[in-house]
Length: 436
Image 1 (tube, helix red, strand yellow):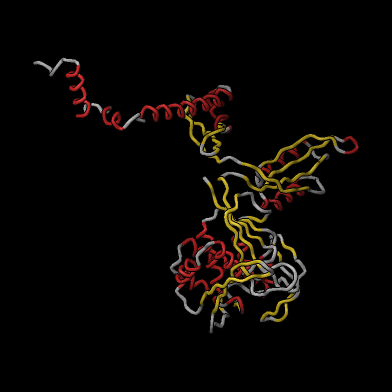
Image 2: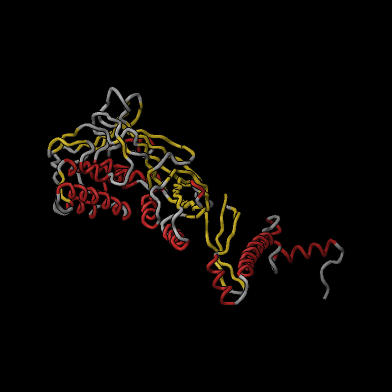
């Protein structure tokens, strides 16, 4: 089974209208976005699209016009609109969560609460249109994962209701906390607060270009068209990959030579609470000192937590890490019924076919202890049980499959078809009709 992956390339920054434009250029019908936005049941806004170019890159620019809208809304205003809307429950929930984050960021900047703070420029309807439109666009695409690149924030200053602010603006910076960012040095705001909200709120993770088969590419254009530097365009790349296929993970390492075996074992246990895997390798360090190389495999979003455990539970002064890709089989659990009891068996599936099986160790351990038999006998019994079940299903399927439609009709016991055929065969042998 294949799944869709979306990559958000923020090398030139990101804003709400750029994201909407890129979604439309990617293939999301503008009519579909308008249909979802009409479910907000509020007037006063209009979406228009135009094709243009920024720095020689062709794309779509979406303009959200809100004539007469004064903005200056509170959280309760947006919440009321969304809760009364006819959006699906999932889209309503995601939109509410995103808008709430925006108010919480503004509240932190101004030293207020999310309920008391009011938004100036961001309080207009175009903020709500950007948020709901982006959620609707992703829903239309049906993507399973959204990966974002590091975010270009731009530079210089931006004029706001509160005066001239350094880029990134205070709320933008708060919304980007935990995300990888950089500045290309250009003297304008590359990433807006709404753009920061959407890229951090909708992305599954940040990282390098994901492994996938490319299907579509779309560009969303910003309003400004700088003469130099990067084109003011956001790129979206839509692709497909096999479910359970390639994914990006991090390898984190630390080499330690001054911990006891007890401490090292505890460190590994703590790492396994948050990582995909953790293992210890004996090494000879400088000055011929024996030591241990601690290797951790973790998802990119877990890097900070893994590093924290290595620093607090270990004695290392540094952690090395780099990104790699790994192939993973699709996995499922099935239950094996053995003479010792039930055992869960993990199956690895490639292209719809089971290629690996492994009985769950804890299930086998408990049964081996309870029945007082060797562990390997329980494991073997589980594999044999699953193997017999698969063979029986295949054999049963083969017996049930008729070689022809006529055979399928004729093999039904007691059917008129069978009786007529028997009579014909008897007549052809010269036996005639049965005598009584």
